[in-house]
Length: 224
Image (cartoon, rainbow, N blue to C red; front, side, top):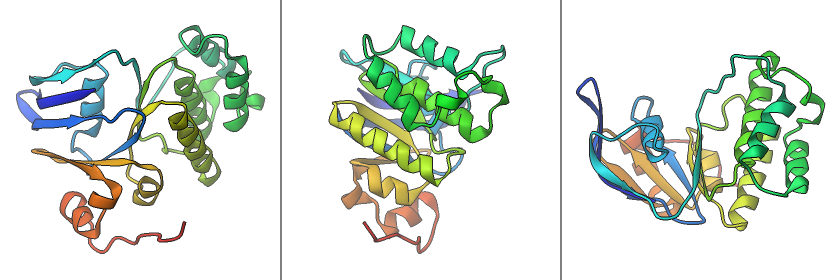
């Protein structure tokens, strides 16, 4: 999937203008940028949920699923029912995979609970399970670490790395530089007028963080 000279406007005001990029197959790309830079807008455009004002998005035979930063159901839906819905459009004949996902994300005891009555972290884990159950080549995940405690941040990391080994492609919007450095193959820095991309070794530097995120002397965790 790639996009060329992409411009998106709201009320005739550009969110970003004439940006271009290509999502690398079977790799993890992390999307970074300050609040309001258009990260969610870009992901929604890639997921065909909004149309660009100008430019083009080029897709091959990829299938994709977009998980928004905020998710909500308005009726009574249990975690189990939510995951059953995911399975209707998800990975066929893979009961073991479903059970593994439920176990990994600590959802077994929550299957009969109303999603709306769960804590923020519990809801996020349910929605991540929903996303991982999709039968798609590409997962677009918008700030998936929101509400997750340290344990489930690690679980999420392990799941992403395992899915990458199976051939899945990820675009993940994050604010956590340390987590980004750990999991990413590629980095996208998004600003109003450009999308700067490269490997983490090339681009995840103090200079780039200062220039594109406005943070001076960011504290890197240099441990493995």
